[in-house]
Length: 316
Image (cartoon, rainbow, N blue to C red; front, side, top):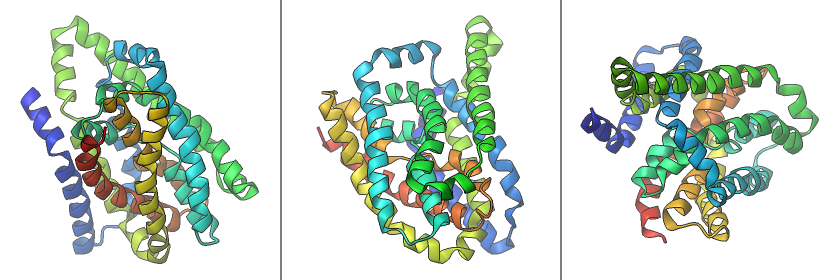
């Protein structure tokens, strides 16, 4: 089982790109409509469950004892990166939907495949993994405030609070509790241990399934919102270049070791597009622009990760 898991993790980038290309190819051949969007939330919930399952309960406590690392992680993601995003959005066209889509995705740090990318990039992936519940909870709490601050009344009229409550319950609380239950079960039962081992193989396939569903469901929006996607690509490229530097600078100020610095840099540069997508889809009139803008960021980010895992190990 461990050998299979290592192969999945070592080849995850190829798996993700295959999932994206396959979804696009299937849509081009069969013109599948957006009905798959109903599967996004269940697939996300399972992906987060198996991701949280990789965090031993004891490691959650360890993450909070690493005060300097957690401080650098939170300052970078929730202070420095929002300032960068606020600057970059000044160069967007005067379109509330485009700006809202960019804010949704760039203000939320990734909590799933960033862990394995950071592992491939010689970062402290386990410490980052142990911090994922805190990152997810904080971004759900802070995102409405960021949106209102950066967009004013226009955001208040577009963004509803109910999807955030729904996301917190079904995408954070329930998967986290279930992961804890399975961990306790595996500690007391041979069957539970086997179940936990099998589920440990699932994070990469589950993420690939989510990518496939998202792309297959939303490619039609990409096509019909091509003008918007072209306009946001330079913003995403600039973010991909600047954000990891911000993470490195902040973590240097907190005097972290090199592997921890890389972890903060990966977190700062990698965004939570898959998880925020259901929140964005709940915005009245979101389709086609907002999902197209968010999915475009995912594609740019996956290409960026290929560079990160080669560059970051050479730094520090």
